Image 1: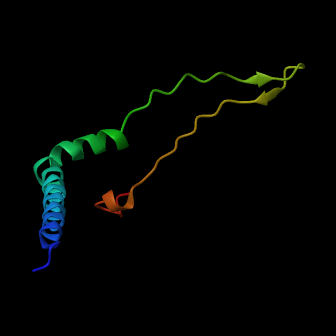
Image 2: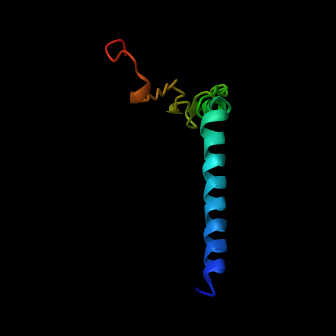
Length: 88
C-alpha cells in the first residue's frame, strides 16, 4: 500500500469540504438571501438627487450676458427594463 495514501485522502477531503462550504454559501446568498441583496442593489442603482438652484446669468463688464443658465434634463433608459418600447 502507498505510504502517502492517507495524506492524499486528507487533502482531497479538505478540498471537498472547502468546495461544499463555498457552494453552500453561494446557495445561501443567491437563494435564501436573494430578496435582501436585490433590495440593496436597487437602492444602490436608483435614487433621487436634489439639484441646486441656478446661479443666474454671468454678465460681461458692459452688461452683455456671457453665460446664461439653462435648464437641462438628462434621462437614462435601461433597455432591459423597458416593458413597452412604443410607450417610450
